[in-house]
Structure formats: C-alpha cells, structure tokens
Image 1 (spheres, rainbow, N blue to C red):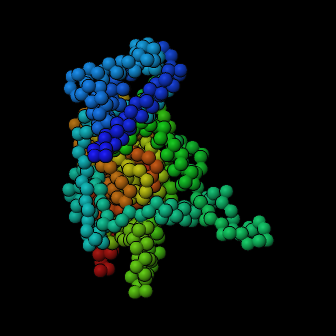
Image 2 (tube, rainbow, N blue to C red; image 1 turned 90 degrees about the horizontal axis):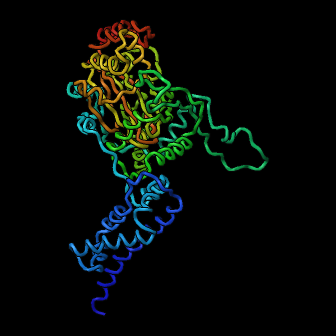
Image 3 (cartoon, rainbow, N blue to C red; image 1 turned 180 degrees about the horizontal axis):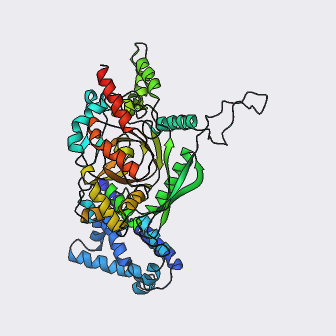
Length: 525
C-alpha cells in the first residue's frame, strides 16, 4: 500500500517513548507503596515526566502531534496530559511528597531515567593547567634519559609530565600473567586454594592445574573528614594495614562493586567529574578504600628475558603471528629501555652508579588501586626523578607543584594544613609520613602554581626533582614506579641528602660515593 512504509516507521518511532512512559508510570506506582509523607518535595514528578518526554525527540514530536500539533497548543496539551497522569495516582501534590520522601524511590528514578545531574566541577579545578604531554617517535623513544633530558627544562616548570609511547599498551591478560609470576617470585605468598602440582591426589593423571595466583595485602585508607572526635589537623588521614589478602581477580571484583556503588547513576563520568567527587568526598563523612602500594614486583618482563625475546622476534624464522602477538602483549615495551626493571641502570641515569639495589628506587614497586585510592603529597626519596607506568585498568589523576616552589608548598601545608605548627622540622617530618591529603584548591588560593594530568593505561608519568605530587585512582588499576636521575638531579642531590639527615631518615644512597663513582667513570673512559 503506498505510503504504508512511512506510517509504519512513524508508528515504530512513537511506540518506544510510549512504552517508556507506561513503564515510568508503573515505576511511580511501585514507589508509591515504598514512600511516606515528608517535607522533602524537591524531586518533582511533573518535571520528571516532562524530562522523559523531552528526551524522546522524534517520538515526542509525534506524541505532541497526536495531542493537537506543535507549538503553544501542544505545550498546553502536554501539560494537561502530565497533570492527568499524575492525578490518576491520587493527586500530584499528595503523592509528590510521598515519593520524594523515599530515598529508595528516588534512586530508582535516577537509575532508570538518568536524572542524576553531573557533579559540578569547581572553578579552581577547571582552571588548573594541564601538565605537558609528549609523544616521542620510535627513534626518540630508544633513549629515555636523552629524551627526558631534552624536555626537562620545559616539563620541570610543571613538576610533572606525561609520555605516551609509540607502542601499543599491554593487554590485561599479559599484565595479570606477568604480575602473578613476578609477585610469586618475589614472595612466597600464593593463593592457598590453588592446587599443588607436586602433590597429586589420585592415581589417574589429572588435567594440568592452573598456575597459582599470587596474593597481596592492602592498606585501608581514610577519605573524608570526621565531624568530631579528632582534633585538627584534619588533612592528615589514617592509613593502616588491612590484613586482607587478595588475588588480582578478587581485588578487581571488589573494586568494581565499590565503583558501582559510589558512581551509581553516572553514565561514563569524565575525569573532571570523578575528580570533583573525590575532593567532595575528602571533605565529607569518612569512607574507607583499599590500596596495595609498595608491592615488590613488576608487570614488565625481566630485562634479560625481554632482550632474548626481542632477539627471537628478529630471527628470520619467527612467524608474523608470533611478532603480532609480541606487539599485542607488551613485549616491545619490555624490550625497550623504558622497562622499569632497567630504567635506574639505563645509560645516562646517575642511579646506575648506586652499588646496591634499593627496592622502589633501583627496582620497581607495584601499585594496585581501586576507586579513590590515593597517594599523599610527597617528594621522591633523595628528591630523585620517578618514572611511573600504568599497565591496565582505570585512569589516575595526578596533581603537582614545580620543584622550585617546594619550600612555599611546605609552608602552605604547615599553616593551612597543620594549624601553623611553629616547629618547621616537625611539620616536614609529618609531611614525610605521606598521609597529608590537602586539596589543590588551598594551594592555588595561596598563589602557588599547580597542574594536573590524567594518566591512562599504557602511558608513563615522569616526576622531576623536588616536585611535590599527589593523586588518586578512578577505579581498579595496576601500575608500577621506579626512580632514575638525569644530570639535572645533581643540582638537588646535596641539599636533599642534608634534609634527609636533618630529619633522621636513613640514606638510601651515599651522595659522596655516587659522586666518586661518577668521577671514576670519566677517568676510565
């Protein structure tokens, strides 16, 4: 029949919003029994129905046309229909109070119709400048110390920068497998539920058991401000060992459940919105998150293994499929000098003269976080450079103050965070405990420069000498960090050693020994 196709499409376009409207009314009826009268009537049912109709663009136009056309008449008709729909439930005013008073009902509306407004982004947060971001070519990427020395003069003015490698990021499967092997080799902790292949339970040959899963221990972190019961300063947060042990899969599942509960109603929130929620939560009633930090291990292959694998990949007998697999699972990064198991000993890095291996400095540490897992304002040990790689999971947000403003930042924290403690040395000691969570808003208001960046999986973040930094995770993620030093670090090294001695911190390296070995290296050339 001529024209039937057009009417069929119009009918199909009308059915979707109509079904949605019917479902909306059924939800209102269901919530009616759960609500009770109260004073909170801020959630307006009429506005909700209008919002639903406005979201159905094409269907709404047909719906209004059926009421008598577009324009003022249609608007009036729509209003009357909404009033009748609500009145059919016993009157708009009476039930709007009943429904609004039920928090469970309100959450149902928000979940189904996404009426949750995006969290407002504070002006101070929106105004923070972004740290520099670099995308080196493969030839530039071949020498990390040379590349970072070249960009340091500009990037150090921010205290931090991001480097995006020219390779694909590792897959989650590769990262989990590598981390499990690494954590098992650096610890005797493994999942007790995993079968032991050396202890067969029957005479028949069982299927090969799955590889054991490494476990790790987390710390509980406080996020929020107690209303009473604790004197100032309240920028200091409690951190303690949780005693909980997880495999990677277990902690990921727990993290996802936590994120679902705290981001309910938000669909694909932007990093700025998550940051807004984080700093809002830091001033609200305390919640508690978990963070596995300073875990010995690495998501990179050991540098010697990576070198052998890299040579095998260049072998003429290597198939294209094997080469593609290597690229997809992160072997190109492991075989590069940016491997965090090798960066401290890389050519050009002054930390290669450290005679002893120092975990967390010359060898990497792993960091496994969840939504709102945070790291406090701090500088690196001996004010070294740091290289941080995010293997997999949700992003991290970083904030930083340039190293030449570090003393001013310490003073701002002493005055505004610690209540003006007259003992400057005691304030530095407290800051060194890495439990100070102060909003960058306070720092910006004091006139200090502060920048931000968002690190995604597969990206490196570099911090520069004496640059204070802080940050948090947007969800479950796995990263790692190690230290290195370009020649620019020598400008900070002596004073860093003195400050460390004044605060009775044991040295992790001998400044004099490092200078001696550096000088000897020049003579032997």
